[in-house]
Image (cartoon, rainbow, N blue to C red):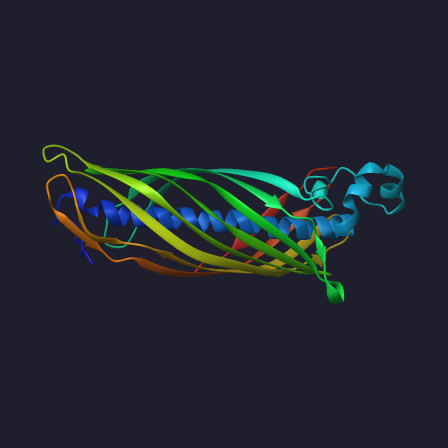
Length: 274
């Protein structure tokens, strides 16, 4: 690969590694955002008591009253019997500090659309929710002497399993982005190239009830992502680049505390990422 040492190269030469690093950050955000849906449905199961009849509860206030379910808790209850379509926009503004390179600013934005199929009731009390999803991803990175524009997307499949208070979700996805890298004067280097990625993530957790209005969810999230590199790619000055692809494994244990008061759902998440 291309070994980059600070102050030894024109800042533009860092562009491919910055692009890969930013793409990785975007994919980690995507997986976390998708897996958030897993514990959202688990919250719905807890606060509404049964996942497969929420449309009936929403249509019949008397049933809700009889079962002492808060009929204002409705963000997720309309997805079960006939399937559900969701839209998840996301924006990120951050400063990233990779090892061996100065800080760079990253502005990322995405919108994903997913279709949740009707709940499949399985043997021994298991419920399965299948989801297909896809979406657009864009980002812009800037640092002293260079910048990247990225435009691309990802798509994949997610399966969520629920049984009593246990929940689990797994995602597999693939995607890519086209990158336009530009350097500053006087050399004005530029280069267009593509990145490809594939990976998966999993989350397991358990609902611990803390009374009628509070729920604690201990969770563990793991993921693996591969992002391609560059193989003898040339810029506008005929300089050649070889950058290795990256393999990344992430493990993040955490706790989520969720409340439900008259339709308001405050929550607090604490986790640690390796």
